[in-house]
Image (cartoon, rainbow, N blue to C red; front, side, top):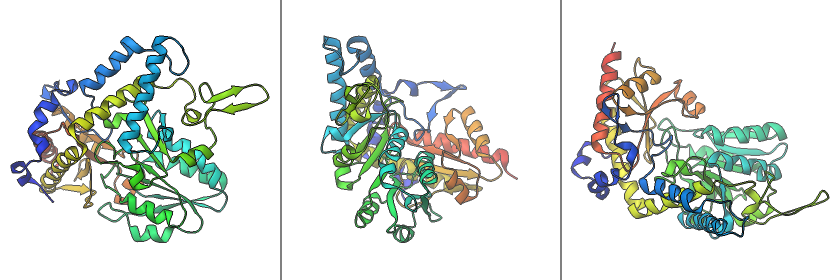
Length: 419
């Protein structure tokens, strides 16, 4: 593990971070008279000026409904919207824009797959395999489906460090498994799962895989063709774009075979009271007026990430995370929750005698924004025998000095609750 010595051997992006921070207007403020230290990036990331400007420009100049007008504004808006789809296709290396479905976020993507593909392939006596690490968004839709059709939800357990028990995955995937659903990166622990290996093992048995990539796309290179993922979902607001825009990637053959989920405008070719003919991909799954402004913002965020370089981002964020973990682990009474060897973005912890909500409140008064709660991952909390944790999560605009400010806040909490 890298740590305090890392301040003497910083990754290349560290030399640019002060300039990068100038791109994020929200970071330059005080909270309760203290400089804001924003360490809640796993919940939502802040937005660079270029994203704000791109959305503002769209609504000032190009705003019109897409695919539906012959006037200049509608045609420009459609070009912007479909240009954003191509940008996303390249970002995850999909083979076609037909495989890129714009939705409200990762949660809607998972629900879409559960209510279309899931209902086609999962029946009574079948099994859906998930992991103990999952966000509620990758538990609830599958539990509902299994309960409704009489299938069984099976769960791959985790080790004490927060890594998956891969030997249990090998045992639990059976001839009755119809779908595997797994997080690329755990939002609660930061564990990076070996999804390529998980997918390969599932495919060897003819089982398709959905990957929840909401916590991966801001931190890791995602190549859906290299992973061979059948479905991959992620959200714009985690990766410096707006809330309310997200993506479902699906292999074209699977998407073409799936029925529509929602009905409305733009997902049809013809409608009569006798017969409906549905549109082809991707329109079939984009009923109603889409979030075209959000798509424009997502494209701008992808450009911004590309300018910095995802590998450089990953290296710098890992150095921050490791430095944070080493400093936290040196404090008496602090317990790290999630210590897997391969992590990204987040570190959860508890402090003896202090409820995580108290930790979060005290830290907030120091200007440090962290998350406190169950992180929409109650089974993870149950595994570790805690009601909640505090979580610091990082982005490339954070600094080593902000980690030090965070540690000062933890020390203050520890002093307040020391027995």
